Image 1 (cartoon, rainbow, N blue to C red):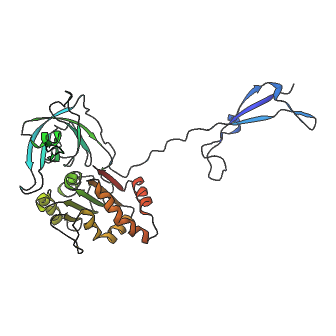
Image 2: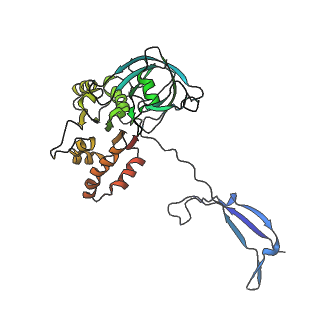
Image 3: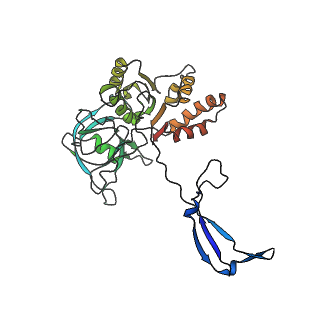
Length: 362
């Protein structure tokens, strides 16, 4: 009786092979054979033969660990969660906008005793005191961290936030106050604050100390960039010395709304070759066409230079603040990219994949 056999064969990936990419081959000695009923006998030219049926077994490709170009190594996320928050205390709370500014913005320093090991570019959650209209505890709100990992006091035991007090009149003419922003802006030294996190990896700094870092901020979106810039220009680290270019664009409505202006000017004075600073004050400045000076309007004045930078492998763009500014920046880049025969939207997707285009807007 003729006996048919079944061979279980897997094929290795080969660039020259025409086989599907997820197949692999094992050597002959690894082929296993299993007896099958003789019903598989075939007749060819009157001769009984034992056909071999090869079964191709596909194998899931081994996961390739993507090596991040950002400072991700050792990053901690979600150490503290809403059900078990860290209880910090307010150490300092200062209004940092002028009296005639449209709205108040406050800078607060909260104690962590080193228990929330955050990095520049991360966020923390804040659970405001009290209950909502349904009698349940308020949900947490996320805030970008405005201090470097060492904190404003340099001892790694504090975290700083930059918060605009939300107050507006609704359709019924009623005054509405944002729950968490008002809770934070009203903090007094010694008050307790429930904190969660840290969270986020999108806005982490690039590893490359020679990188060009373009930072685009509106209002309190300046928070993560203050953390970047403190690390770069105000601190000394054995494992990090910045030799690249940091270029900050900050958009605000009035000059009395410029946040951390004195700090940034000191940085520019300290490292003029490594730091560029451009403000866009929409209610007070205009461009040569008489248009209001929004952040994208200011950027348009450097459009060619910015586009040249974006074509380099070590340029990283970070955007934080109001959602609308991204479209304005897209409008600038579309025509510039088109001159080089490049579709900007596709190119931006490529930049995102390479971690060179990082956005956190609200």
